[in-house]
Each structure stands twice: as structure tokens, then as C-alpha cells.
Length: 617
Image (cartoon, rainbow, N blue to C red; front, top):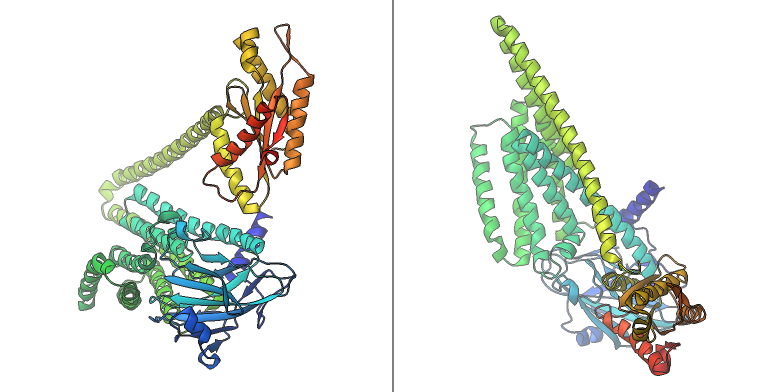
């Protein structure tokens, strides 16, 4: 079942089936729409001149993906949205190119600006209206209205502008599937890279380390291509976003050179000397390429990388002709697939052809094909070298019969040592796994102790602070109410003074046990907030529901005294209730403060009662 879900997500992400109507119409069946009915112009200099521009100066385009190539001028793009619903609708507008420098979005109705937003990879993650690696923002469409969207897009490194509209829940579902599949792809490449590095550690063959470095860089490139490199590695340094992709392409090309030298037989040909010189110059240029403008870095990369790769391909081909081997042929295929990736980016960035929704699929197939060929090449090289070593040993044995017995003993010892080494590796691996499992169990026990109050067995203040932040995010994301109940034992000092501190502790513990019995859902949590004070967190609970729970707890404690050491202790509690839908999650203490104010009001009004925060406003 999980495999079927993953396959469905993959199809959604790679092919993104959507409607392609001639106009953007919002109705009750709307889920998503790729905007194809676009018009564009390079003439306006401001939104005012764009609104006053004559219709014949706007150029129509009906393709699914707008691509102007390496265009240094900003382009103005516009389209219409017709909301046929009788209520306001807030779709998400997605520009599925995370590498655009700056996008100004104007939402208008009858030439009046409803909203204005700025997007682009020149903004850090915290500066974006929606914290996403993609260029994503929300529109608010008035009921039964026709509105216009105008975008000003600037990016000298390539103007590729795929625009789509999404219903928010549909986008979140699609994004979850995309993140899953993309994470699996990047994780798979990382696992292959790690495997190569481990093989290098066992064999000390440099081509394993080089193959691992290339595979890791390919995975890093794929992560940046999806915007995740920016989101997780440097969300507050957006300037790296534009230059990192060309630099990674050049770096991968440079890593192929020492791998080729390791696997191919040396040549004294002039072309090989030229290749070494060009590679050295390319490596030196990588140190100073940061000083160039973004568009020049992109152009330099798209010109020099395929030329260098083609030279590598040529010299590898000549080596395969003179010394045929499956490992060199596999390396030749890996170079070909990676060169195809650079050709794809040249075609895409220059705007010569639009691949539309197949782009990510093409790059993924080429990347994985390159990786598989690369891993096969180094494994085959290792096996070939091992076989050659065995053949050489057998030849020496055949020529020197006098040392036949000795050599056989050496081979037997070598095989035994190899077997012992493999056995030791398996044994150490098993011991390590057992140790790791024991460590995980201890960590879980320690984490459990760190989150529980020793006296009551309820969660402690530290756990509550973390849980509150998590539930605030859930409330904001799902737009569901979150209720907080603050409970305090009335006249607790009197209980301590009258019955002793040990009895007071028993009263606190009994109060915690009573509260737990009234919490029925797994997500409901009670924590000891401090001293005789408790706090209850009720996700997705309306105000009246929270108030009822608090009142039931208060009434039960009031009607059922606690028996401690043969003495009947009758006590009461006061409670404050606050319910809200989270908007700002950066100040969680404001929400507990509101519940605490309601509790304080209950104390002021005579104790043994529940007060709703709304009643004291």
C-alpha cells in the first residue's frame, strides 16, 4: 500500500496533471490550474505604465511554460482570474522556479490594486510571506469578481516563468508527496555516495572516493534544483542561490578528471596534455568565478562545462578503443548522461525549447543513469583489478613450480585472512547494532524522565513549552482552535500548614490523577506548570468544550475529598480557560498569559470556579 502511495505521489510530482482551460475560472470544483492564457510585454517601467499600456503592445502566449532565455530586461506578465463563487476565495499562486531574482506581484480589480507582494530568491526565507523554498504567495479573490494579476519578473540568469494557481489543501497534499519523492531521490543518492566512501575505506581505491564525491555532489545539485538546498542549508543567505548551481556543475566536471585518470590507461597524446591544461585552468577559474555577475557565471558554466565534458568523453573513448573494458564503457556512459544534463540546462536556460512538466523527470532520469553507470564503472574496475591480480598470481605459480606449494599456502592464508576480516566486520557490525539499540533505549528512557514530573507523573514544564509550540504550529496550519486551561489548587498553603508538606504533595498528586482521568484523547496533555499549578493543552477543542472539561474537573474535586494518612482533606481548585486559533507562533507565552489572567480572575471572584478569558475582556 505504501509503495502504491509513493508511486502515485511520484506521478503527481513528475507529471502534475492539471486542467488547461483557456481562462482561469474559479468554481466549486477548482483544485489547481496551470496558467496558460498569458500576455507579456517588455515596455512598461512601472505598474502605472503597465496599466496604461495599449492592448496591442501586450503579446499573447499559449504555452504552459513561459521561457525567455537569458533576457536581461524585466518582463511584465499578466492574466485574468474569474471567481464565480459567492464567497471570497484565497488560492495560492505558485511560480515554480525558485531561481528568479525578483518578482513583483500586483493583484488588481477594476485598475485598483488589491494587494502588492515581492518574491524572489534575493529574499531570505524569513523575509518571504510564505516560508517556502518555492516562490509562493496567497491571493484573496472577492466574491463573484473578475480580477487581474500583473507580475514584473527580473532575472538576467534566465527568465523561465511557470505560473499555476492552487487550492490550499490540494497544494499541501501535492507538496507532501513531492517532498517525499524528492527526499527519497536525494536520500538514495546520498546512500550511494556513502556506500562508495565506505568502499574506499575498506579498499583504499581512490576511484571509490571520487565516485562517492561525484554522487554526493549530484545529490546536492538535485537538492538545490528543488529549492531544498536553500531552505535547509542557508535560508538566510539568498545570494548563494543563483551561483551555487553553475559552480556545482563545474565542480562535478572537475571531479570526473581524476576519476578518468584513475580508471583509464595513460596516453602520451597531445590531446591528453591539452585536457590536463584545460582542467587546471577550469579549477583556477572556480576560485574567482564568485566575483562575476550571476548571468555571466551562468553563461560561463553553460559554455565551458559541456566543452570540458566533451573533451573528457573524447579521451575516454580513445582509451576504450585502445584498452577495451566494461568499466571504461560504463564511465563513458556516465559522462554522456551528465553531458546530456548540461545540454538540457543549456536548452532550458536559453529558452530554445520548453520541456514543461517533463523537466524534473528528465533531470532525475539522467542523474540516476549517470550515478548507476558511475557506480557500476568503479565496481567493475575494482573487480577487474582483483581478477588481474589473481591471474598474475596464477601465472607466477605456473612459471615457478618450485614455489607452487608456498604460493598456494599464501593464497589460502590470504583467503582465510579475508574471510576472518569479513567475519570480524560482520561481528563488529552486529555488536555496533546491538550497542546502538541499547543506546536508543537508554535515550528514550532518559527523554521520558526529562519530560515527566517526578511527583505527579504528569508532563513537566519543559515538555509543555515544546508541546505548546508544536500545537501552535498545528493550529495555524490547520486553522483549528487550541484551548489552554490553567488550574491552581485553592489555599494550598493552608493545606501544607494544616496537614504537612507530605500531605500537600499527595494532594498535588491526587489532583494530577483526577485531571488525567478527564482527558480522553491521545493529543490532550496535562503538565505541572509549577508548585500547585497545572496546565491542560487541548488541541482542536472549542471554547465550550474546554470550559466543560474544566468545570467537570472542578466539580469532581469539590465533591470528592482526598484521603491522606487516614485524614480527609477537602479542597477546591480554580481554573482559567482560553481558546484561540494561532496566528503568531513566535510568542507562545502570550497564550498561557491569557489563560493565567482568566485563572487570576477566578481567584479574585472567590475561587472554586472556572472563568473563561472571553468573559473578562
